[in-house]
Length: 277
Length: 257
Image (spheres, rainbow over the protein chains, first blue to last red):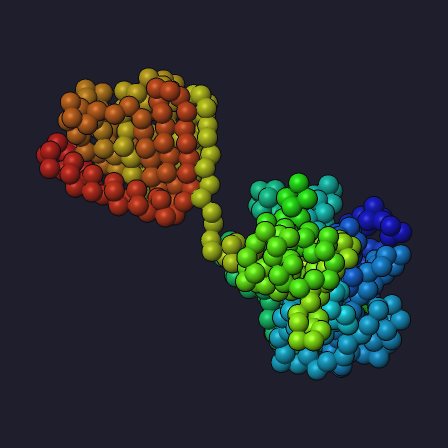
C-alpha cells in the first residue's frame, strides 16, 4: 500500500504558554496535525483500510465533517475500496469541494437533530445488491493506543488532554492508559452544544460510547464542556501555538477548567489542522 | 463423496442427491427426478423448490407440465462467493456494533480481578495491600500461623496498620497466642472475638475490605486477592453473621470498641 503508517509517528513538543498564566511547568503538545493527512484520525483510518482491503470490502461509508472522510479517501487510493462521505449540507464549500474531489461519493444531508444508525448509512451508500459495505463512523478506537505509546516513550504524563466529540479518541486513550496501569488521567474537552458549534467536529447528538464515557468519568477521567464563547476565546488565543483548528484548540482550555498542580506533566493532543484555513 | 462436499455449501443430503440427479438428467419432470434420486415424488418436489431458492434449479412450464433445469455447476462458486460477501458484511456490522457493545461492557463497572501471590514475599504483598484499606478490615485469622509464616513481619505490621488508623475486627480461634495478642487490642486498633478452637480452628487468614477479599494460606504459602464489589459485599455480610455467632460464645475481648 502506498500510504505507510510507519510515517505516522508525530512529535511531542514542549511548550511554555501556561508557565506564567497558570504556573504550569511541564506542558507538551502531541502534534497530530503532522500525521500524513493532518489528523489523529489517520491512525484509525490506516487500519480500517488495511482490514477492509484484506477482506475485499467494496465500499466504506461514514459521517464526516471533513478531516476523517478526506483522510480515509486518501488512504484508499490505490485500492478498489470506494469511500462514501455523508456530510451536513451546511459544511463549508471549500471542505465539500475537497471531499467531492477525493471521495467516491458525497451525500449531503440535513444532519441537524438526526441520528443515523449504521444500517441507514449503508442503505444510503448502496448502489448494487451484492456490494459489501461497512459503516466506519465509529469504532477502531484501539488504534489510538499508538498515540499513548509514543507519548510514554518520551515522558510519563500525569494528564493527557484530548478533544471529545463522540468520544472515540477519549476512550482509546483511556483504554490504553488503563492497560498500562499507573496514575495518568485523560481529560476530555467537549462542547455544550449537541448539534452545531464553532468547534465543528465536536457536537454529537448520539454516541455509542455513552456508557463507557460515564464509566471513565467515575474512574477519575474528567470531561469538561465549553460554551461557544469559551471555544472562540480559546481558539483565538492559542491558534498560533500549533497548526490547529477550533475543534483541536479546545484542549488548551483545560487549565481554565481543571485544577492542575504546578509540577504536573500535561500533554495536550492537537487532533489536527483542519482541511481549510 | 460428492454429496458430502455439496453439503458444505449449505445443501441437505437429499437436496444434494436431487441436484446431482438433475445434473445427470438435464431438464426433467419431477417424476424422473424422484426416480433417479430414489425419493418419493412429493419429497422431490419440495427439494426441487428448495434448490430453486438456492438458484441451483430453474423452473419452467411446458403444456402445463412443470420442468426443472439444473443451474450450471459454476453456480456453486457463486453461492460460496455470496456467502463470503455476506460474512464480510457481517464483519463490518461487527465493527460498527463494537463501540456500543464495548461501552456497555466497560460501563457495567469494573470486572472482578484476581491476583495470585506465591511464597512468603507474596503473602507480605497481600498484607501490604490491606494497608490501603479505606474501611475497617474484617478478618478471620489464626495468630500462631501468621507469626509462624512471617516471624519478622509482625507485630511491626500491626503498628503500621494502627498508625494509618485502619481498624480491624477479627475472629480468632481461641489459643494462648490469640489471648496474648488481644491484650494489645487497643494499641493495635483491633476488636477481636475468640471462637472455640476444637470446633472452629483454621489456619488461613481471610481479610475483607473495600472491594477486596484476600485469602492467605499461611501453611501452603500463597495469597489470593480478589477484587469484586459483589463478592466482597457478600463476604462482609457472611462475616457479620459469623461475628454474631462468635459473640454467643461469650469469649469476646474486653477491649471491643
